[in-house]
Image (cartoon, rainbow, N blue to C red; front, side, top):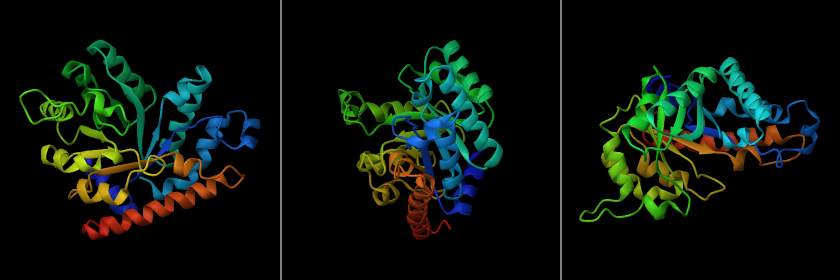
Length: 277
């Protein structure tokens, strides 16, 4: 999926919602544990209930690899299900990979070729040669971790570079603009870091931003849109726990669909205010 196709989906669905599939087997409804593959069954029902309101799904890889081989199989079935029934939806592997070049190449092959994901999150702090192998795949996205929502972000990302007024994340962001264009790079910016979105947009006015932290983590959708939305929307806002764990009864998927719809309606209003729909 390329840049224009992504924007077309946002306009068509009047949404920039990404549903995070952070599927924790200890939190899913108990009756699903009787299924052959409880994780996949949970994901399938969430996907069916929320797909009409979403433009992306983001499996967090840690929640699958924690189960070993069975977890990888659940992940594969989940991605295949999305690609088969909802091919218009972006599949983001939240894998946070990044290593020396030949290792990154294998990570890229794993998620782009074997799992057929559309995008992968990548840690950029080993530099260009750790990122460039991910850029070799046509119509695939690299989503660089730039400014995250966790408390530890201040330990390194918000450090001031000596002799400048820049934070470390700004230096990394500026450097990355020499590696690829808006058609290849997205960036992770936590919703709780909305105050920095103006600075970020001054550096990358056109790129898409993946924004986690709405809902359970306390980020404000309105503030994110106010400071981060551009002429192509430029936002993919992720919500996981507040949607997928909104209910633990047999109607968990219906409730998830309602929560996704509520966010979609709010997003539609924000897009309309910007004149994008």
